[in-house]
Structures are given as C-alpha cells and as structure tokens.
Amino acid sequence: MTPVEDLLHNAPLPGAWFHSIEVAPGVWTNGHKSREHMAYEMDIWRFPADLSGKTVLDIGCADGGFSAEALKRGARSVLAIDEQMTDGLRRIMAAKVFPELEFRQISLFSNAFMELPTFDFVIFAGVLYHVQDMLEALKRVRLRTAGQVLLETHVNEAQGAQPPMAVYYENDELGGDPTNWWGPNIACLEAMLRTAGFGYVRSNEMWDNKKRANGRISYLLSPSEGSVFAEVAQSPTGSNSMLEEARQTIARLSEENIHLSARLAALTDTTPEGAGATPIKVKGRWF
Image 1 (cartoon, helix red, strand yellow):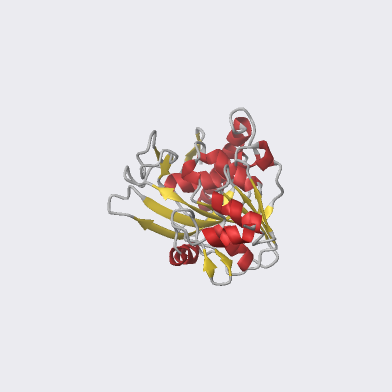
Image 2 (cartoon, one colour):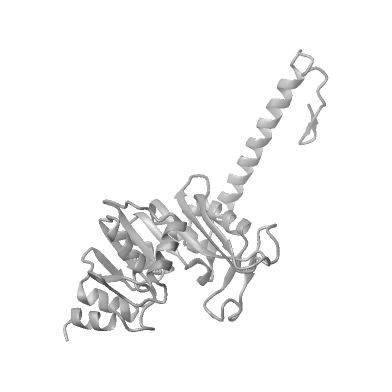
C-alpha cells in the first residue's frame, strides 16, 4: 500500500484523528474536532482570511489541521511543531499532501525552538495551559514573532476576576487531563501578555457556566515595546530583575512627573480655575 493509499484508507476511521482535514478533493479525516467546529473556531478566533505570502508557525500542531488551513489561505510556508508526532500527521507527511508544510518534533522549551527564525503569523491555540511555565512560554513565542499571534487558551475565574491570579491543577482536576496545569483569570493572562511584550485584541470569550471555572478566550497578539522580560528567555531566573525594576521605576517617575507638571501649571495659573489650587506632596516636598 502506498502512502497515499494508506492515508485514504485511514482518513475515515473514527478515533484516529484529532483534526478534520481535507486530504484529497472531497476526502476528509474523521477528526475529533468536526469540520463545522473547526470552521466555527476559526471564525470566532478571527483566523486571518488571507495569509498570502506569509510564513506561519503552528505551535502544538497535533494533526496539523490549522497548518493545512493556513496553507489554504495562501501561506507561503508553514512550520508545524509538537513534542510528538501523531499517526495522522505522519500519514499526511508521508503522502506529501501539503508540499509547503514542514514538521519538526521539537518542544517550545528546547534550544531548537530558540534557533528558529521569526514568523509572520504564529498559531498558539490550546497550548498555554498545558505548559508548566506560562510566562516563559509567552516570552519564547514573542521572540519568534515578527507579525501576529493567534492565542487561544483556557481561563478560570471561579476565584474572582481580580486580582490577577491563576489556579494550579496538580493532577487531572481540569477535564480529567493530567497535562492541564494552569487556569489563569483574564486579568492574570493579560498581565502576562503585557509582561511578555505583547499588545492584544480580544477576539472571543466564552464560559461553561455562571461559576466561570472553565472558560475559553482568544486574542490576536502583536509584539509591543516596553518590557525587559520580553527580551530575556534564558537567564537563571527567567528575567533580568534589575533592568525590569529600573524600567518600572522610570515609568512610575514619568507618571509622577506628568502629574506634578500639571499641578505646578495649575498653581501658577492666574485664572479663577487655577487660583488657590490644593497643594500636593511629592517625595516629602509640598507643591
């Protein structure tokens, strides 16, 4: 049996596929995620309709369903990575269904990942809560991003929307899956995005019930300036604490300076609105 014959024989078998992928005209794999559900996800995530000429990185690709979709939408090339290669993706690669698709069995936390080039579009869907170090994962994704990231992940607000916090799943508390580690609330997730050096636009949010213990959220991310942590991914502590402290101090003093300048302008203003403005105290001095 040739690789193509093997693929066509196995495509309709139930339980063998995670994604539904068109591997030949009119021939789809029998995925755990149906064609309709995948189309729905890409719609609410705002998966770009046009990726013409772009390079794409698919992190945690599973069978490669979203990699295949990126190629259908015009991507010049797609690199799909995962810590393991599914039987389904092995059959797809053997049959050479998508010539512009490359697969590498590497981890997000490996040196090999850090040696990758940057990409125009990064797919990071259904992965973040599976890693033990969420912030480090986001920093690494940031370092490989030249354009935009599609992030989709689990969130948990059963303990409240504030302050920023995350629930840690030691065993299989979330969905009976021992590879699920974290359930951040939205405030925590967005704080980590800012720390990692991302600007973001939320594209979708949904919850299982009023307890908000199990939700899904998606974003389109873009690299932003202003975070030292985003530039550091391999130091012993996972950050450069002195530089980050200096950055935050500068930001705080800049805000104080703006406020102080406004107050001084009001104090010297001779108009009725400015006259008699209430003095303020900054670092032990009254103004």
